[in-house]
Length: 308
Image (tube, rainbow, N blue to C red; front, side):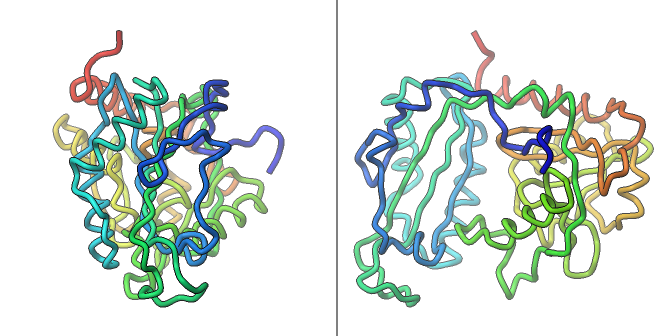
């Protein structure tokens, strides 16, 4: 990547993150002391599920929706969470309190099948119970994510079919997306635009993808992408506010001719796309994206409280 490149997860540096406490199976440890075993199934095989969440004004945004996805994913792969939603919320609350965190906080909640007795694949070799890790950081997206936008490059790596590895699973096994990210970097872009197995535009390696054409908002069918919480909130907001929105198949032809494009994700909310495959998106104006951003910000304030 060039020196002016960035990612959808670039955040302002916050020195407080140097001394954060991390939850590891009930213990709150300094980041330098927080460790898991090299025999952990997450390290050995990527056998685990995770969630990314944000804390605003002391409240986790869309907690129930994140837990719906998390518990459904764990059930699909027969991964025992080891606690209920109330237990997860208690762990989150205790971790936030240990770090004196209240707002503009990003959390990565990670659960693996636990420590194995031998370094091999079979799930029965994980016999200690699950490993739960919670990393929270003070995290505010850099201004350039909104002002400059993200540069995308269409990559050959695709999101696969559900019977290979269902892309709806938010698993630790992210090599497919890492490869897409590397391919985008080699093309001089910030992030990779991934197609589905049929050649239709799908998602990026890290976020869900939307375009705007003649006032209409388009996104993929959702068949081959992450079941994004922010993605669904944008769709719901469009429907509730008279913005035409469609979940449909479309090709790069429609992307290259779009008026606007943006990404959705828990960290960046809605991040504008500046170019795709070296082609500028529209004329640089983003009225529909800006309207959606304001609607989403209002939704966050309505559901978590207004900032002090």
